[in-house]
Amino acid sequence: RAAMAARLELERERAQEQQSLRRVIAAGVAAHDLTTTLREMSNASVGLGGSEACSVEIWYPEENSTYLVAETSIDEWTGDYPDGMRYDLAAWPTTRRVLTEQVTVNVLREDPEVTPAERESFTRAGTFAALMIPLVVGDTCLDVPARLRGARMRLSAGNPSTWSSTCA
Image (cartoon, rainbow, N blue to C red):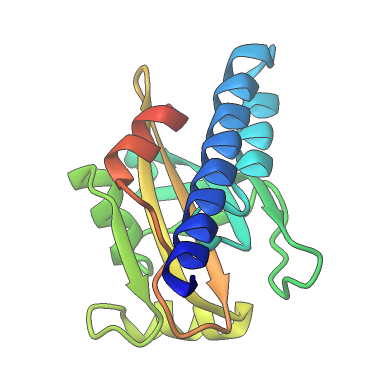
């Protein structure tokens, strides 16, 4: 019975994630402008893989920076960043890697590859884990970090490449 209950719970979680993915797709199709689309994507992504916050940043490689264009979180989230906030990628090498190599990166705040500056920012915002997904829309590359606070686990992405291509 316990195994059956665990399997049913896993299937319920998968169904919820699939429903959220459909909302992400619908947001992209229904929205009329890029900013609205990205806000809807952020809204629909909270909860995927256990995420409690989701941001969307647009990359400007000529400036070596990203700009926050949308952020959504659960009510209890402690981080709060204004739209338009600039991130200099010299201070965010993990984000830069996601964008330049177009790879999905799943990190814990305490992972050795996280720089001291990134770790301090994660700590200040209450972020314990981040799943960073690059999305390419035409000539624009977006960084979509989903974040989890407090827990001692990585975010679940299922198959990150499927999540990213579905979001795009």
